[in-house]
View: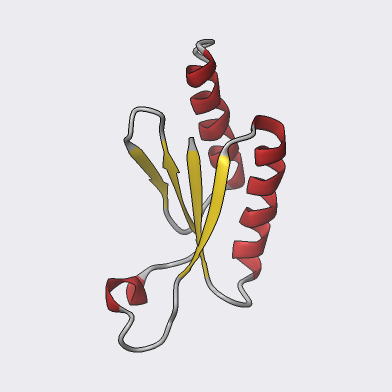
Amino acid sequence: MQVTLFTKHNCQLCDAIKYELLDLQGEYGFGFGEQLVEDEQGCGEDVETLVPSVDIERADGSTVRFEFPVKQAELRRAIRAEMGRQAGTGA
């Protein structure tokens, strides 16, 4: 499983989700990355992206997106469930 956090500079909400994801990564060992969403002209479609948002790429190749406002409890529950599916426990 790969988790990507879409973030901007100086975003306190992004930082809170990042620390939650790092805590979960330590617990479950999934891949984690950040993608900076620039708010300057000429960046393309990402200009309108609200942050933080999180993509979870599942083992089957599908992606689940948590859009702003990301709720930490829902994010934690989704990661726990996906890691349980990968382990074959169906949690």
